[in-house]
Image (tube, rainbow, N blue to C red; front, side, top):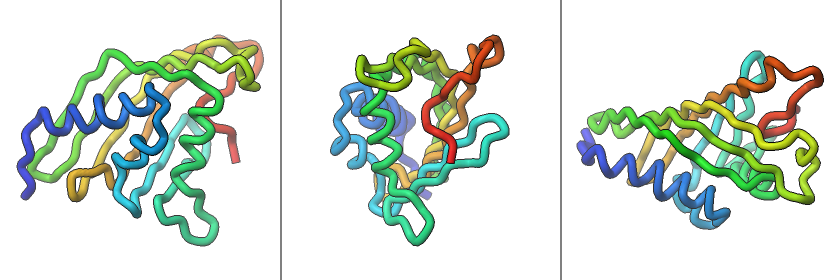
Length: 154
């Protein structure tokens, strides 16, 4: 039983993690995670993408996910709703993200993506140990051509 206060998790997720992503500070982003953390991305019917702090054969390092995001987009996050289970050291956040392609990004022709996300955070030792990311791209349903989302398919 951990029992950290609700505000601890809000700060870790919204200010420390998402604030560092918005600020494009990769070192600060990675500092939010345990050394052997896992990040799993789910989007629609696509195969889940898994990244690890200490990847083994066939796994991708967490840094590749953030390299892609920060190289291609200026992200902005808003409208957070947090759900905290302090007893089990975990929380979830529902929010909206705006991904504005950078001028040299191959995603520039697509324009700004506005996604609805729900992330689940399992914590250990005051850091994120496992982040499960579900996102939807509501504008993709009305697109006449395939619309890229946050990470290329495998």
